Length: 271
Image (tube, rainbow, N blue to C red; front, side):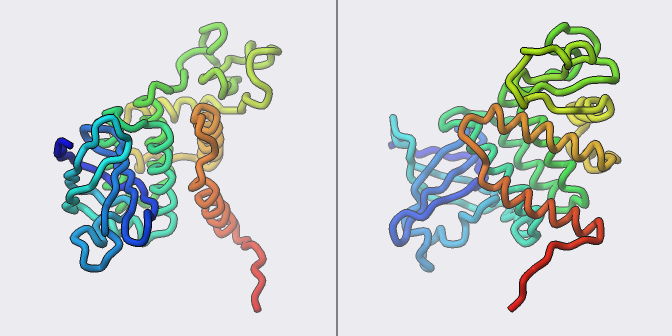
């Protein structure tokens, strides 16, 4: 078993037996890997407290040839990102991104761009006052890395300019112009999502704007809702592993946030 060393981010973990964990890492050089951290749940273990979700550090592991489960030797923490676990909304967003990476990237597929994207996003997220816009930019760039970038410059059907009256075809993966959006038999039923020209231009801008400047973009609430619906529909359709569990939790938090902003709160039973 060769010993490997790489930068890594903890994406999640599962208990194994009484003292061990199976930890999922996003690594700089090896893509996503799963590894057993033996004894890490014991207080006296040198790994105890180091393998929390979103922690960034240097991973040393024993690579098991022809196996999809390796063995953790050590993990030295560079940045714990504790603040992201202390703020509920930011934790929900980052947990969603971590699960998204797990579902789309596969073990053994090295993708340093996705690792760098996740690390930069978490670093900016610590002080971000508008984490939702940052997450939308992550989704757009992550789709590019995964070869699933939506077509935004011209109509998916006729290749003409989309104009101002358009829709987004989730199944085909791009925008439809005013003439083609009403044609029958173009795509799967229910896969056509309304979208404004302004939101399409916003998506293009998010593709090219440096990530550290994304949160400075002024985004209208209507564009936020459109962008959220389009990207979540697109990701849900093209990620074959099923619905992301973290998305249900995130959606409930976002709904509560919208109710709070509107001055309306859901009824809560008290004993």
